[in-house]
Structure formats: C-alpha cells, structure tokens
Image 1 (cartoon, one colour):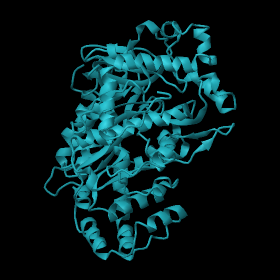
Image 2 (cartoon, helix red, strand yellow):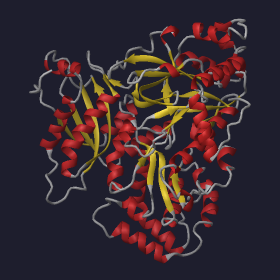
Image 3 (spheres, helix red, strand yellow):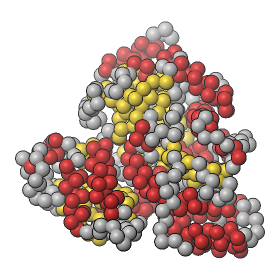
Image 4 (tube, helix red, strand yellow):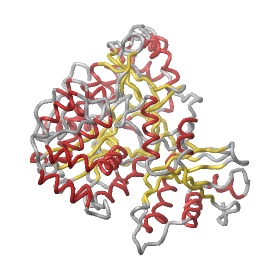
Length: 603
C-alpha cells in the first residue's frame, strides 16, 4: 500500500490484521485502484486500458486485461533488464529482479520488484511472532535458531541486481537494521546468514546454535528440506563443532573474514563442558531419534514450510524431534508476491491453511472444480482464460478449488501463479486456503495425467504402510516419465531411503518389500492411470530406483549451481526432465524394482 503505514508490531499488528480481514472487499478494491492509478500509463496497460477515466479504470481493467503466464510478461522484463525504462510495466522504479525457483526456456524466471515490496514483505514477517505468541508463551525468554541463507546475486546487462527474494530481504535494511526485539533474538549473526558460501554459512550458524543450545526456544528454516539438510550436515561435522567449542577457536576451514569476525563474538573462549555434552549426545548413541530435542532441550517448536510436497519431510522431522515438537508453518509467499499467514500455527500440518491478506496485492481466482474434486489441467497455459471467469477474493466458495491470479504494484497484471488452492474457511471476510499443488507438475505417458498431489499421496501412503513398519524412512523422492527405455513408457520414481534405523527384531527391507511399494504406489494413482496399465496396456510397470544416501543433496547442489534458487528457496522437483539431473540420479542408483507386468488390481 504505497504511501501508507505498513510497520506494525505486536498487538498493533494483530489489530491491523483484524481491520484488513474485516474489510477485505473494500481493501481489495482500494488496492486495485492504487495499482491502476500508479501503473495506468505504462506501455503494457495502455494496450488494454487506453485513456480510461479514473471512474472507469477498474471496470476497464476487469473487462479488458487478459490473464497471463510468464511467457507473456517475459519480453517486457527482458527489455527492462537490458536497460529500458520501468514504465514498460510499472509507474515506480524497478529496483531489482527476483529470481524465481521456476525456470523459463532453461533460465530462472525474473520477477520485477520495487522498493515498496520490501515494506509489504516486512509487514507480513512482523505478523508471525505475534500470531505464534498467542499460543506459545515465553518466546521473549530465549533465542531463535533459524537457519537462513543467501545466494550470490548477478546483474542484468543494465546493472539491475538479480537475486532471490529471500536474498533481497536478508540484504535489506529491513532485516539487517531491524529494531532490537526480544521476541526475535537470533542465534545466527547477520554476517553468517549473509555469507555466500553455503557450507561456511551452515557451519557457523549451526555452531552458534550449539553454543546457545540451552537458550534456544525455537528452531527452523524456510523449508523443511533445508532443516533436514542441516541435520545431515551436523551428522557429518559434529566432531568439528565439539573441537571448536572445546578450544574456543574457529576451525581453519572457515576462511570468510566476516564470518570469522562475527563468530569471534559468539565463540568467546573454551567451553570444554559444553563440548563434552554435545559429544556425548551425538557420539554415544546408536540412534539419532530425538536428536533435536536432546541438543536443544528447551525448544518449543520447529518452524518450516511443511505443506504441499514439503509434507514429505514430516516423518523425518518427527523422527529427529522424537515427535515432541509441534511443526509450525507460518506463511504463504512467492517471488511474485507475499500472500498470507496461518492464523492457527499449532494445527496439524495436514490442516494448515493460509488466510490471504487483502493489502498484499489484488487477488483473483480461476475456478478449477467443486465438491472436493478439481481438474489440474482445467485451463492449460496455452488456453486463454476469459476475464469473465475470474472470481474475486471475497467471492470464492467454501470447499472449491482455484488457481491463484495476482496483480501487483511491481507490474504483474493478472499473472497466473500456478498454485492450486482449496478454500477451507474464512477469517472475517478474508478466505483461508489450503495449498494443494503446483498446477503444471504432472507425469504423463499416454492418456494418464498424474498431478503432484496424487503422486505425493500415493508415495507417502506406500512409504507409511511398507517402510515405516520396518523402521525405514523415505527421505526424498522425485519422478520421471520414461518413454525412451521401454515400450510402452513407464513412470520412474527415485527414492532415497534411510534404512539405518532398522531394529534387529524389525521386519527386513528386501526386494519383495520394494516391489510391494511399486504396487502400492500404482494402486494409489487415479482411475485413468490404472486403466492405461491394465486395460489399454499403454503404460508400463512402475519402477522404483533406490539411490545412494546424499543423492538428493547432490541434486540440490546441482540446481543451486545452475541458478534460480538458494537453499532457502529450493524445493525438490517432484518431476525431473533435465538431462543433468537425470544423469546425476541414474549415476547414484543402487537397485531397481518394478511392479508386475500384469497387475492383479483392477481399473
């Protein structure tokens, strides 16, 4: 909301939340009017709005401006990146381009950002602690161990910074010069968060968290996957941490000067007793079950995104926390726009819903289905959606599915985010949504079209029924529609499994079990897939390829190196197509298992 107050803290922030949601319809109209008044003279909007008067500008927008995808706005963004004026799409100066985790034509998608966007993001961040503090008391009595990371930025041909949205925020004055706040006392010094070397950043942040282990009341990362990578890093480096704490000196492998300087204030001399405690916890045990609670015994919860495909990591997080710590998922955001917050932070991860805040942007929705069903390819990217089909924020219906469309101050007009959401309720006049999946993530061989949610549901059900009883964890998965190695083509699922948890008296994890997993995954897919397998014979037997431990960390490193994501942003792709990614995964396969050629289940 350009020119309006956006800095709220504590009770004031909660009161503003109530005001916004109670007047969601009015706030949305005001936001759209402000956006259009600011951007009406841009080259993009002029194509559709012409010389519309102020009284007609909103109606002309709703009638004439088309619904678009990235390929429609990309030519304008590339022109701006090459030096043309921001007025191509926005009335404000574009200060940076944000690298989305998505790609277009093999390159990171670049999203425009203006100075006011940082105020809106900060507004949302400032809501989180007051919301949680309503349910979890005493957060002002200790520290927060949040593992945050930046990615090295690049420049466009005209000199505009190109960086991830989280790198933008962590490097901004809003984060670096944030007011002292007893509710947000982080264990990690700013310099360790801002270190571009992710390994050195991870090392220093974990070391700081271990030094303050008794003071840590909450811990987390942006995505659950990043937190699990931290646990893996800890598993490999705990002896180094103990050495540094025991001697009071930072190891020579940390050579970033600003990290070393920042950590000198944290590592304030030898602490042999602390090193002994950590050594005993990490070294004198057969299992890392509950390691989080043992290392940080006063932690009250874990904060990370655990919705959508990230719910894959919930069993592992519960294992490492001994199922004692609530998993809190606080906000819904993207590079394009920050959207909303979870008003019930202690709810089960399967019930997380986000209430969209009407001052973040102008929100519209493409209907995808009713009565608990939706068609994930209801509107293909290549098919133009008529503006008349769009539903406004306050007019969505309970239980129905929609794809989110957003209009922003920074120059996105009726832009399809690509997220499928289901309406779960309302807070005052503002609807709450459950994130379902990314609309375009599908596997397809023939007439079958498997979306991300169906794939995730079938895989997690198979892992729960067949792996978990054998004390094995499915750590990661992705998939590939293989049409080259077999006729007909078939689904390939890559699994990384932790089977070191298996107890001596537990059932063994053998080939028969993995073949049963193949069958269970297929049984969980939809009718069309099963018909293609059994009746049409147009899809071959599903294959699970088990990969070595650490393979998905290598996959993450590959995608981060190629650009477009940081550790904060990275989400394991649930379907891979790039040759480099497939070569990496196939090079780490330890065994392959197939479902029967002629399954016994019926379509």
